[in-house]
Image 1 (cartoon, one colour):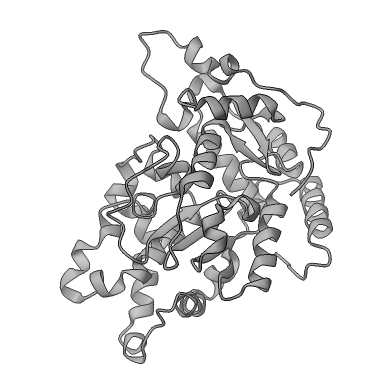
Image 2: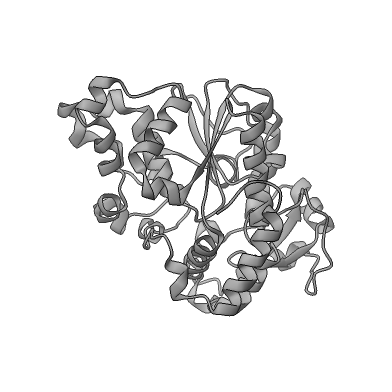
Length: 355
């Protein structure tokens, strides 16, 4: 957890200012997509927001500093509901990531891995859910999806092991997650690629009248820790330390290692989750089949991911930009690279972690 730093631009958001995009819009104009709506807040959430340091957001009107991490206004409602209401089961699997670190890809991999006996048999392959639905529909987020507006979502349709996703920091996880035997799979990505991907993604989600965030403006925010679920380094370190202390409960994965040695990392993931590949499965191409099905090239070309939308309004195609390692070299200046590398070195000093 970090204390609130003396940022040069800090706001205290009022209820009216949180929804100024809504009030500015003419009645005849179409409503904002759900991911930009922030009027359905509980009284408790509104009261809490008044007391939190806030800054201008990348996508939402504001980001708010809560328990040492920054969350969008709509996001905060889901954070509080998740912490108070989610009851983890010992058999649950939680995928945890910082935004834009490979979440969509690993959602697909985890779903295919845990459901391989149901859908990867030859006569069932054409009916695989990943061919018909976006990975975010199949592996819902707790605070951004299930609990964002509903304190008691119906989870009865989820079969064991239940598979969910979250961007919550380790300190902000519900007590039921910390106290149960459920497993956490954490995926992190090089901060330079994470930043560039997040910058592209949030700009694509912004409405035309909102304009775009400049690279320089968002880069400075990212470096100061002011990004969704940031500071990035605190988020990563929290789970890295947890993986060292509780290797039976937390698996720490790196996006770059997943792309470099996907078969090795997939088998490592299967072993951690207690569903290792059998010799027959490996011999018959079971590992390669999952990797092929969940590959960026395959998923990005599916009709559902080219034209579909999530219930919250995001276009599925926006979750598939490049997925490349090292794309940051096309965007960051030498000065930006030096600053980000210096911060990363300072933040990770003594931890043993290198990205």
